[in-house]
Image (cartoon, rainbow, N blue to C red; front, side):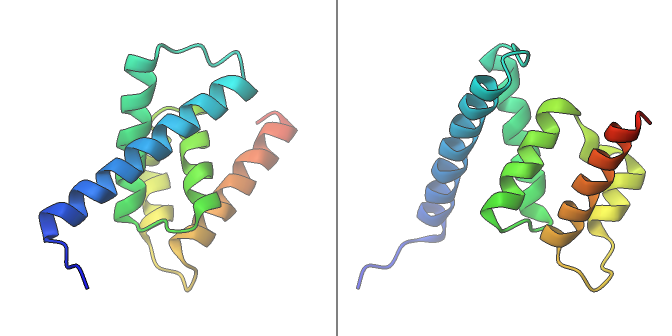
Length: 114
């Protein structure tokens, strides 16, 4: 059995995150042509958001996608104190579920024009 060093594991995880960010940037820009931010600005922003999501930890693939999708339309949303508190305060739900709840709150507010 092959054993990887901690550095090798971190490198592997970073490569996976980079691939995930590249894929999401492409998906977002394909699905939403109005997102015409240059890649040299957009991808680092998505990478930073994913790094933050990893600290929560957001683990489900769909939740990770949602986190980056929200970043595409609401830059830096997760850094706002009230949102950061929502995402980080344990309330019996996982970070993935708290993100899902937050997404639905945003969708309802958008629908109502708030």
